[in-house]
Length: 200
Image (cartoon, rainbow, N blue to C red; front, top):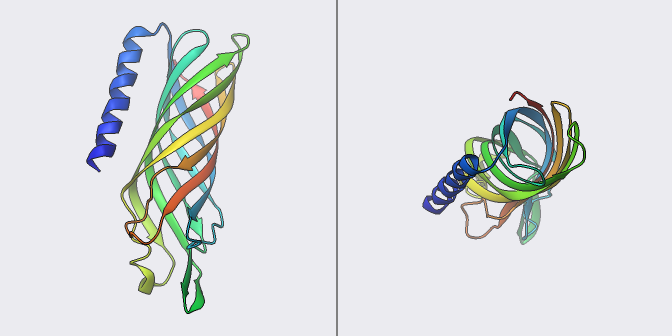
């Protein structure tokens, strides 16, 4: 937890420093949908995807070519039919795991094209802080579904700006194990599609 907070503080400090040095600054609101899986290396999960949401704010710092884009948004993610137990006989526990998270991505990108029609490529780390979690699986399996309150991931994708509208499509790969159990290695992976509005 302390390491993640330190990383978050470092990313925010970097963004503020960039704001002081880079020539242009824009930002606004964003909202969108995601399609997420809760994957496991041990085949603990069926990895069926669920549909989630996201909404929040974004800023973009930088001149022509290269930019830094920190964001902050609330979203939902998780997985469906999450548990398969292999212990003598295989037991499947149907259910759904959902997280509500506060996400802080800091993306480095490049843009090209005319002023009113920018094409963009971007990638960078994202820290997710879990503010709520729920499951519909049987309570007997709570120990397996005991999840951490934060996770680290990596986002990469492409976008386009048309006037004051921005559209992004990204893939987010989980880098850290979100399960508290040492037996299981579960990571959150998802696709994001979002629409943004430039306000300044």
